[in-house]
Image (cartoon, rainbow, N blue to C red; front, side):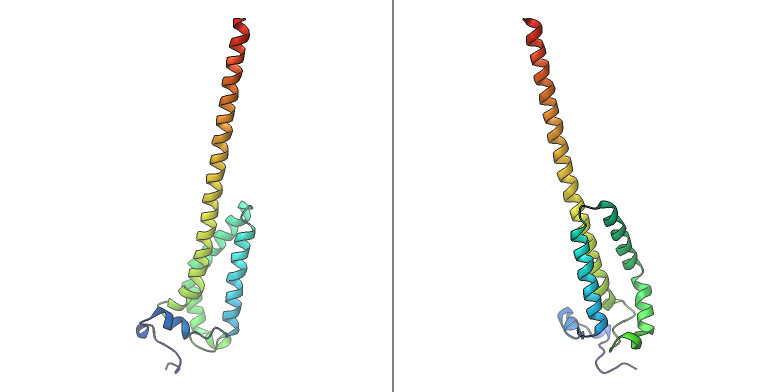
Length: 148
């Protein structure tokens, strides 16, 4: 029923051993790694484009949401694109190689948004304080002129 290189999920006792047993030279896995690198670069390079990043964020979360369906589809058709059957019913493999890197990119984008919002709030408060100082200065100057 199972191929000799296939490891059942209940037999996995070490996460690193699980990763070492993956054939990373499989063309579709190389494509997946290239996909993750390109999404990472896109998230970094478009950090100043809020609308684009919001769409990218939403699309990435949709991919994670549908990862269970993707896992089922891949489990039934694995012979078409893979050398080994990686797609277990628990979804461990797709979670490790697909969902976790996508979620890390989403966390990166949220962190970038939080940093940008703190910078914007800091700049806004500085501008408010400068305006307040300017108004107080004008007020004291107008009082001096009136007293003379």
